Length: 201
Image 1 (cartoon, rainbow, N blue to C red):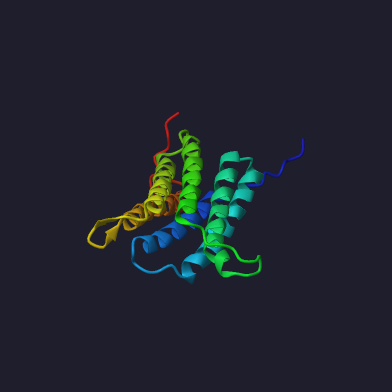
Image 2: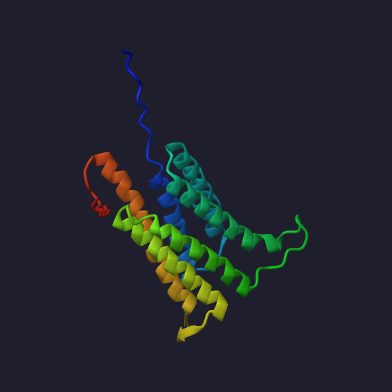
C-alpha cells in the first residue's frame, strides 16, 4: 500500500477578514468625520477590500466552503461596486453616467443589509466573534440606508447620523480585524492566544 501525500492548505479566511476589516475601519473613519473621502480609501477598496477578498473567495471554493466562497467573493465585489459608484460619474468612457441619488444608494445599502442578515444565519454554527462581525455589519448597512434615505439628519451640534454610523462601522471593521488576527495567531501558536468563542456542539 503506497503512502499518500497529504497536502496541508493554508486557511485563507484570515486574509479575507483582514481585507474586509481594515478597509471597513478606514472608510468609517471618514464616515465618522475624521477626514474626507480620498484616494487612500478608494485604493483600499480596490485592492485589499476588493481583490483580496475575491481571491480568498476562490480559495474557499477550492476548499469546498460554500459559505466562505459566497461571503468573501460577494463582499469583495461590494467594495468594487462601491468604488465604481463613486468613480463612474466622473468618467466619460461609458458615456455620461449620472451620480447615484440618495434614494438609489439607500436601496443599494438596504439590499446589502438583507443579504448580510441572511448570511448571519449561516454563522450560527461558527464562533461568536464571526456572529458579531455579521450582526454588526447588518446594523451598519441599515444605518447607511437610514442615512441616505433621510438625508443624514443632524443629531446634536454638528454630529450627524452619518457620524454615528461611522462609529458603528469602525466597531464592525475592528471585530473582523480581531477575528482575522486571532485565527492567524491561534494557528501559529497551536493554542488560543486571542479567544474567538467557538459555538459548543
